[in-house]
Image (cartoon, rainbow, N blue to C red; front, side, top):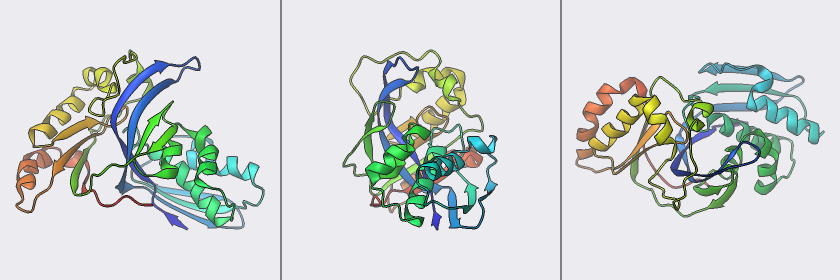
Length: 270
């Protein structure tokens, strides 16, 4: 079974409060980006194996979310047998794109289908919730308003069809600890135009702030850092006359090595 775990962006992100458990409650809108994805092949086998290529993930095997998902679900559902996993990492980490969470969620989806577990989406959400705050979103994988630590989800209607998106990630990443350092709860109502993490991240990483500015200068009608960074995205109104291409030409030449995606939204997947 071959799956393509995609990434996400955030439209706005408000830090509501710090919780007693050390996490933060937030408000955001998750939007799936299908054009940038990893590759995950899961096949029943006589013994478990895991092969990875693409971007190197510097973590112990037991910390890999794909393997953690497999072991967690195998312990609960004895009908899950050994599998051979081939994985190609294309979504960078430290990017605010949720790549690792997507990989774990898609592993759960694969195990559910391969071993006929019969779990609903709501049940799969409960399976992946302990693996990461963003994991439940990738079970639904359509635009959602999120609360809590990002795991309380309400699917929403969001029409971005025909909107062009450009994703740019500088070489430097942003750690979660760094992003939350100095963050203060925002007393204002949620605003999808504002990402609270920009207040703490931009002073530490001026290049991220510069990328956002350059996207707006190039004609983006909306630009923002995604999640806790370091990826920045811009929305453009594409046109048949090539005006958008002309505006983006200089930016794309300057940031060519940092551009992850230049794509146009289509219909949301079911």
